[in-house]
Amino acid sequence: MASPATIMERRASITSLSSPPPPNYYSISLPLPPLRNYDVFLSHRAKDTGQSFAADLHEALTSQGIVVFRDDVDEEDGEKPYGVEEKMKAVEESRSSIVVFSENYGSFVCMKEVGKIAMCKELMDQLVLPIFYKIDPGNVRKQEGNFEKYFNEHEANPKIDIEEVENWRYSMNQVGHLSGWSEEGSIIDEVVKHIFNKLRPDLFRYDDKLVGITPRLHQINMLLGIGLDDVRFVGIWGMGGIGKTTLARIIYKSVSHLFDGCYFLDNVKEALKKEDIASLQQKLITGTLMKRNIDIPNADGATLIKRRISKIKALIILDDVNHLSQLQKLAGGLDWFGSGSRVIVTTRDEHLLISHGIERRYNVEVLKIEEGLQLFSQKAFGEEHPKEEYFDLCSQVVNYAGGLPLAIEVLGSSLHNKPMEDWINAVEKLWEVRDKEIIEKLKISYYMLEESEQKIFLDIACFFKRKSKNQAIEILESFGFPAVLGLEILEEKCLITAPHDKLQIHDLIQEMGQEIVRHTFPNEPEKRTRLWLREDINLALSRDQDFESE
Image (cartoon, rainbow, N blue to C red):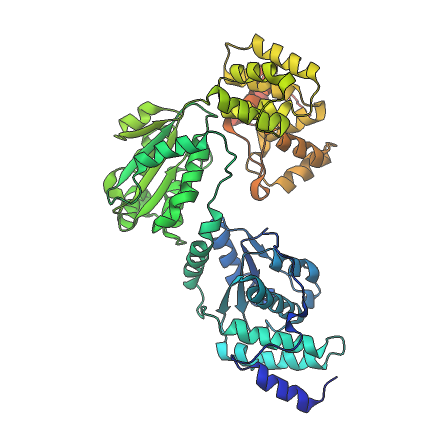
C-alpha cells in the first residue's frame, strides 16, 4: 500500500479538472462496438433515492418509451442486487448514463459504476448526465464531506487496489464537472426531455426491409406537409391488419424531433374498454407536454387539452379510433393545437374521418402481388424471393391472403421450415375459406400449432394481452405448460410479440383466438374452456354450472 504522503499527493493532483488521468486509467478494455440494450443506465444509491427521486425519474423515463437499467437494492445492506459484473456490462450496453450523486453514493458498488461510466464516456462518447441530489457538487468533485469518509475506507481496505481508488477519484471529478442538475422534483421533467431529445435521432428509425413502406410513406408525407405552419389532421384508414399502426409509428419516429411535444396514444378502442376518456385525455396532455401529475378538473379534459397544447407545435397520433366522440374529446378541432401541429388518426372507418372534417385521408391499400410475395418469402424462407419449386404455392397463399400484410406474415411464418405436404394442405384449407373473412384464413396458422402451443395461444388471446411476459410464463407453467418454448414459437409464427416484457397480440389475431373458444359452445359459456367477458361469466354462474379451465 502507498504511504499516506503519497496518497495525499495523488489526491491533490486528481481533484483538479485539468489533471491527467491516473497511469492505469485506460488499461480496461471495452468491447467495440458494444451492444445497446438500454437507453439509460441509472446509477444511484438505493438507500438515498431508490424509493423517492430515482423511482420517480425511472417512471418518467419509461413512460416516454426510454429503456432504463436500474437497480433498487443495496449490496452493502445485505440485499441481493444485480452482480457488479452484470452492472458493468449494463453500463457498456447503455447509450447514456444518469448519475444521481447523493450523501451515500461513495459506496464500493457506486464507485465501480461511476468508474465504468466515466470510462465509457471517454472511450465510447457515452452521454453522461450528473444530478446532485441534496448535496454540494463541490463535495463530489473534491471527494469532501461524506465522500471523504468513504474514500478513506476504500484506501484503507486491503482488498481494494489503491490504483483503482485513484481511478474512482478521477472519475468522480470528471463526471462531477459535467453539466447537470442540482435540484429535486421539478427537474425530473427537464432531465427526461433532455435525454429524449438527445436519444431521439437513434430511437426513431425503421427497418428498411419493411415491404411496401416507402411509397406509402411518401404519399402520407405529402399530406402531412411537414414544415408548413398550418395545423393539419391526417387520417390513415383501411381494414384491420393492413398496416395502419405500423405506418403511424414509422412517421412518429421519423419526424417527432421536429415538434415541441409529441405523443402516440396507442389503441384507443381497446384502451377505452379498461379506462374512461378522461384518463386518455390526461395521458395525452402529460405525454405531449412531458409533465406529470396534471389533474383534469370536472372531467373537462377537452378544454384543458385546447388550453395547454394550443401553445406548442405538437405531433399527436390517435391510433385505432372507432367512434366520433373519441375524436371530439381528444382532438376536437384545428384550434386545439399550436401552429405547425399535426394530428394523425388511424381507423378502419373512413366515414368517421369525414364526419370529423378530416379532408386529408390516406387509404392504406393491400400489397401488390410482388410486394406480397416478397413479404411472404421473408417469413417463409428468410429470403427476398420465393424458392423456385415453391413459387406457385407461394403465389396461391399470397392471393388467398388478399394482399393483407398481417395474414401474409402469419401464414408465411406458419409455413417456415414446413415440408411440402404441409404447404399443400394449407393451400387446400385456404381454398375452402377463400370467400370468408380474414379471421377464417388466420385460423389456418392456429391449426398448424402443436396442441400445447394452441392452448398457450388461446390463453394469451383471452387473458394475457398487455400483461407481463414473466407473469404469464409463471402462470402457464403452474398449469404444466412449456411456457418459455411455447411463447418463443408463437413469436416466431408472428402470432404474438413481447416488447419490453409485455405480451402483445394484434386485434385480429386476438379476435381469431377468442372466436375459436366461443365457437365450441356458442350459446353455453359455462361449457367453454375459457371465460373472459363479464357477461359470459355472470351467465355461467347464474346457471350454477361448474367449469374448469384447461
